[in-house]
Length: 339
Image (cartoon, rainbow, N blue to C red; front, top):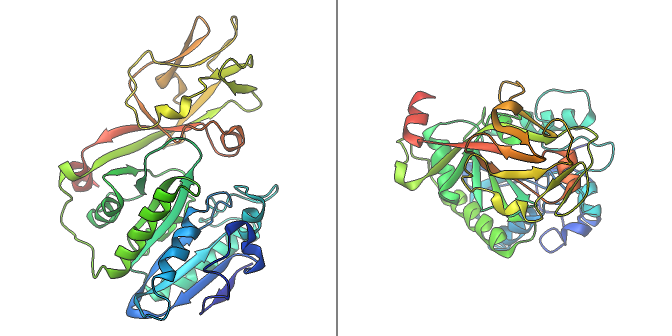
């Protein structure tokens, strides 16, 4: 499934993501030389409807037309077929950001080949660029509480999320090769998100090394993802005054990265309904729904303070992925020291 090439295909720098299939016929790994031999690895379009990474890559490479790159660059462009239809992934396809551990599909084999292609090249850092469908700040994600990883994420912004599940994502796999970060750049095609990602990638090209000393605590807002929240399988849900089995507020995504107090109403259910309609699973795979959510008088309420991320009003994304993640604030210096 994987094309491996050592030059930019004609038209790549100008094509719209919806027309990318006219330039690339599938997932492609591109190797480009630069002054420093260890490459910056960039992964983009793992989700076909999240195009800011490709737009940032195009903007970055346009800065170096006719000029030697400061550092070698390896770029993986993922789900070209889904990008054509503006979808996260096509029906019957696995999620391209859930294939980075060994598995049975051709897509798993493709991801493994990308890793094995990059291993002998000893990448300097890995950057995976994504978008959200709800209202979120721009932030970085790491899978290791290593000082180098935290410095890399802080280069993008002071808000950083640490998570270990799902463990099948690209950044988790590449964290075994080099410092790795996932960039969440707001909504797809958001100009500010594209600009910030472009500048971040350019900064990575110019870095000689990452600091190994701790990030100052006042320079970082670090959050730990402690649970993933889904809607019960097969349950009908909607937003606003929806009349479904589970109704969320019409502006629910505005709750992202807000520290919500206990007793906050997250949803409503018809009178006489049993259960919250939500399923929360912690990093160890345990059902912890009763720790966070309760139902009283038709209202789904928080049982303890929490901060959500990735809340969205996109029902398809909720069904394909999840409703949100639950986070807790942690001290970056203490966290890295105890890791």
